[in-house]
Length: 594
Image 1 (cartoon, rainbow, N blue to C red):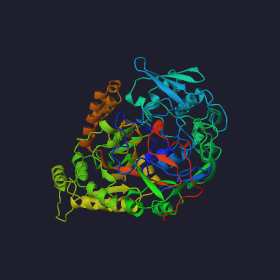
Image 2 (tube, rainbow, N blue to C red):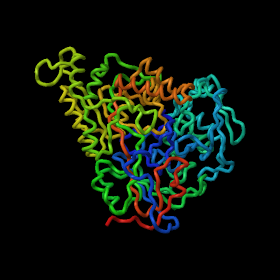
Image 3 (cartoon, rainbow, N blue to C red):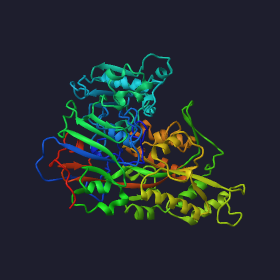
Image 4 (cartoon, helix red, strand yellow):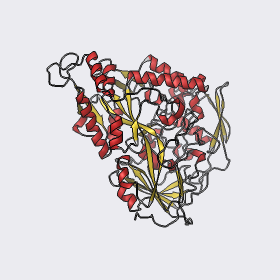
């Protein structure tokens, strides 16, 4: 879960569909995320494929796109979904999400010498504008993200782990000593340490690529506002190019004739942001061919005759987080505040035990939201600690913990005062999503009130998703507790979310023990499977005990596929037969429900 590996889903929006072929990574487990699904993982429809055509794709979200397209700068799922059509990482992966040779390049690992050799898998690859793609583009991107002017969130220990990176970034060296170009197709990266995450997509090897011939003359600080990052002038290595854009709402893509896997068979793909409130009627009318569907509305669309529902265990989870400090932007580290209102482990634990997530998942989300018991969710197979108790509904235990911690109802009004006997109010922030989510947020407040806690909704209402995460990233001290969500990507390493220097450690929890446990997970010793399992389970237990973040839900993600799509699957990487270059349509228009 390193932040560089994530299509950083500030997950107020649905997780990326498998067909978007997002550059995320893997669990080291042999289990795959397609097990134990209620719905099929693939679908075939009868009919002869038409030539070309336009596929209509609904990005189901309550918030607009910011307009950014390049994956070096995107930091939410909406932007990443659009950007994933025109930008791809340098590596691809197999059905178990392990890096293989099916991408633009393949890695070779030498743990003894601490090197990663990156070799292009072809010598005639081209950018969408026809310019040659070489290893220089990869090297250029690594250096660009190390630039002090870089405004994105991808630069982390994935990059600082390269020998000589610190000196280069500090300006005491003019080049990065750990990057050695062999030829136009090969580079050797020398690392400070080797970690198991390197073997998996979205893991600990830099994977982003930007066209050097486009960006070399643009200051890195200006990339975010460059027309090449936001308009039809974008140049990428993805399956499509930009044909037309409606700012924040829609993008029409044209097939990229230079795509390294072959030009897509559809002529265009039109992606629209569609509200969760209207997607059911849109799918019924046949207006969209593919859409991730809201779980809470399953009963309203499960019997539509014009679609097939596919399912996959999501690489996403919901959680309750506690504000324990702030992120120091100068020191680039999280700093705990010992006087923070929520800096009482028993208080945090009590708030977890007060929530009946099992009932909420069944009643609000048709059973597709299931209680999450660990911050390493079941998507990750064996390294998920299935024996961890988690915060199951136990109001009696919650009351006992609050009593022990000194939060007592002094005046007998049913609401607990603080340890000093004075009024004790907790401010809770939540993002705006669906109707079911609005109900859930109010239920959270009611459950906490049942154990005597006065919890009030920050601003008096749920907050637009982008604004919500802006507040968290700014360490808004008016927020005590918040309900967030993550799309984890495929690399389970939690350092990018909960490490001491992680920008996305919104709880700002830091301790020596936590740091050491995270270091063990990413250690060279964890290349050994048994050691890897032991280290992951040790951290999960510690995170459960400290309750700096309490997982609430993991889910099965449903994707509706219109019957004019010839074949679609939810398989991963090179195991998928439904890459964009293979998608075909069997009719000019979407099939309408009878």
